[in-house]
Length: 407
Image (cartoon, rainbow, N blue to C red; front, top):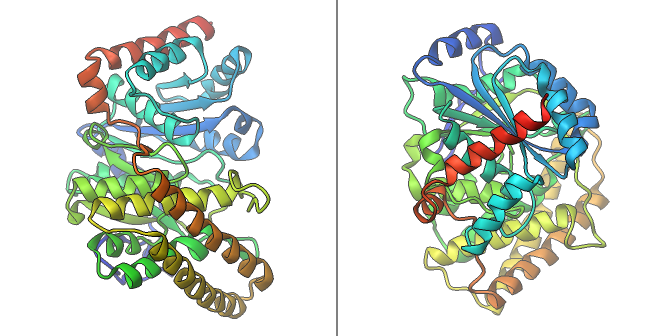
C-alpha cells in the first residue's frame, strides 16, 4: 500500500487508493479539449522485434485521450522504416514515425551541423530532441508524456498516471517525473540509481556542503526513470544532454528554469521491468559503466556552473567518500532484500560499487581536462532563432517520408 509521506522539496503524488484506470482515462478524455495530449516514444528499430513494444502498442490502442503519438525511430534503413510504418499502423490515434536515419531528416541534421546546432552524438538524447521538435512543429499537443519502448510490464495505467499531473487544468505543474519500485522477479533492479546516484549525491552534499540543487535531486524517488511528462511550452527552452546524462540533465534544466512548486513526481507502476543494461566492466564506453561516467560528468558540470570549484585532490576525496557511503548502502539493500525474501548477490553489488568508484574518478578527470565540453543540445528557441523555418522543414520532412513510404 502506498503512503502519503512527502520527502524533500518536490511534491510526490502517490498511488494510495488504487484508482481504476478507466476512471482516470474518463477524466483525461475531458481534459483533452483544453489540454490536448501527445506521447513521444523514442525507439530503436530492433525493439520492434521484441515482446515489450508489441504489448505497449497493444495497450496504446485502448487509450482514448491522446491527440498524437510521435515515434522516434533510430538505426533503421529504408525497408525497416517502411516496416515500422506498417507496424505502428494499428494505432488508432494520429501518429508519425520520425525516420532519424533517413535522407530527409539527415539533411536537416547536416544543416544544423553546419551551424553547430545539431546533437553531437547518436543516442536517446538526439532522438528525443528531434521528437520534441516535431511536437512543437505539429502543434497537436499542449501536454506531452515520454516513456521508453522496452517496458516489459507495461500497462496503459502507467501513461494515464504519468500525464495526468500536466494535463489536469486544475494543476499548475509544468513537469512531472515518474517513479516506481525497481523490483524484477525476485531481486532488486535500479543498480545505477541505488548504488551510484544516491550515494554520489550524499557524497557531494558532504564534500561540497549544502546545495539546494543537490537537495532537489535527492528529493526524487527515482531520478533515472526514463518516464516524464511536461507542458509543451517547456520544450522551447529545454537543453537536452546527448549522452547517458539525459535524465539528470533534464532534471537540472527544470531546476534552472522553474520554481520547485511547478514540478512533481508521481507513482506510475506497482511493477516495472525493462531491458537491463550490461555492467560492461571490460569497456568503459558501454553499458552501465558509461552511464555512470556520463551522470557523474553531468553533476560535476552543473555544480561548477553553481560556483563549485573542483580539483584533482577534490575529485579523489569525492571518489573515496563515495566508495565508503556506497558500501554502507550495500548493507542497507542487503537487509532490505532479506526481509522481503529477495535474492541479493553481495559480491556483485560490491564489485559494481568498485567499478562506479573508478568512474567517479574517470568522470572527474575528463571534466578537469575538458572545461569547454558542450554536452547539451541547443534549445529549440536558439535553433529557431538561427533558422526561423526549421520547424516547418522538420514537419515537411516527416510528412514527405510518411507519404512516400506508407502507400
